[in-house]
Image 1: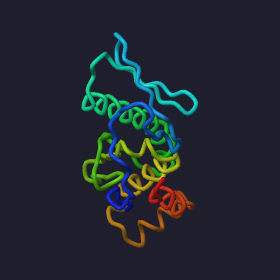
Image 2: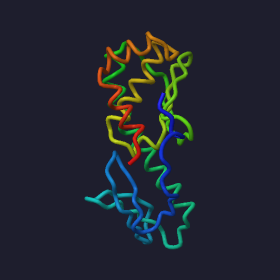
Image 3: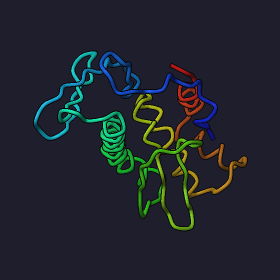
Image 4: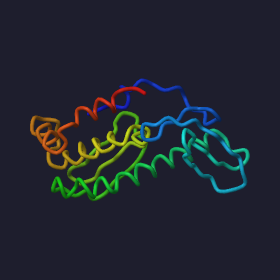
Length: 170
């Protein structure tokens, strides 16, 4: 399984104008707009517009951005699961999306639950699809044995390419 901790480290984020943020593998320069309105994030070509109330600190900006990334994953995972579950003959009971320090995803095959790392929203979309398939295969084969890799090859023959993209730095 690909590990987040093996990734080249990015500079710490401060959520200020001009910082680079990635969404689905594309780089966006952050623009912060202080206004008396509900917080929001909007993508424009090359720009991530973070709308915050005046005086919003770095901690709150980070929390807003993390929540937005979590929503991106939730929105993208739903159609992927709708496609892959029937194709693979499995069904997930619950999906969790959270920031994880060491893994891109995880599966509890006994409870039929899967977890996805919010950081996947920074990677190209095919990386999320690879992790979805990887975790669904664990519902059929809990360990990373020969059967697991045979199933991965059957369902997603190009999975190694996606894993390579996921493990490559920016």
